[in-house]
Amino acid sequence: MLNTVQAQQSPEKKIGEMIGADISFLPELESKGRKFYENGVEKDAIAILKDKGFNYIRLRIFNDPGADSGYSPHKGFCDLEHTKQMALRIKKAGLKFLLDFHYSDTWADPQKQFKPSAWAIHNFTQLSEAVHDFTKKVLSSLKEQGTLPDMVQVGNEINHGMIWPDGAIKNLDTLTDFLKAGIAAVKETDPSIIIMLHIACGGQNQESRFFIDNMLQRGVIFDVIGESYYPRWHGTTDDLKNNLTDLATRYKQDIIIVEYSQKKQEVNDIAFTLPGNKGKGTCIWEPLSWGETFFDREGKSNDLLDIYPVIHKKYAIK
Image (cartoon, rainbow, N blue to C red; front, side, top):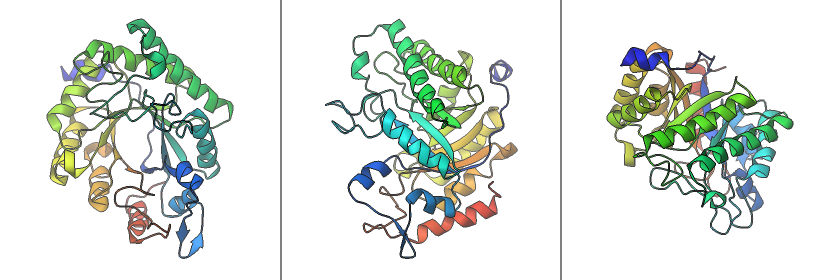
């Protein structure tokens, strides 16, 4: 089976190392007057992260977050326009850009993958077309302003599927079709964009293998395995290391821990030392305002930020 699976993987792309941060909350925080300081000096949060060794920024995008039932009713944070504004800031800072499609008007994760309201009565064929067209619309708009993402997630934490109930994990063939539709739109826009499939199984090896094997057996072509790791749900760092070590030896795709917050040093050490140089790094989730944050409530930076220049130097991040 392994040889068959490997034969279906994409041509190799150059995937550099990542020290990333998802800071999708930033425009919302700034709209409330939030400022950020390093050593008492006010600075743009993106500039602070860059100075500390970060080289990637991750943004999530929802279909219609401004809807009444959306993530940001009547304000539309994390919609296309806000994403375009943030993409300009990211590229101006000289950083790389990872775009995370939720394919929902609000949060999508293993507990919920709500269908966008505009797609509520779509049949299977219409849903596949909608995934393709929405992905293509977003990427084409970013391309027009010269801010294409370097990497794209087709779905967010999709180990239980996406666009429920149609694309739930029990409907593997339908889920596969949705993923292929999104991936096709990415490749049509720019075939050099790195494609990630993101699952929330940091310490769960059997579930990780079940998902990846089924996608590869059905001909889903992608470049990076993304994993979330939160100890509350995903076990110990030993569980994380054992899972990712197995995935690194089992599959050709590179691996990124694309969401985490706690155990910063340990998580990065695991991510950058996987067999075969398969571990390409990490992306911390919302460190400006969630979990073990880099800043206090007054926006003053703390010692947690100082871990990252050490990681940057230790692993020779470019």
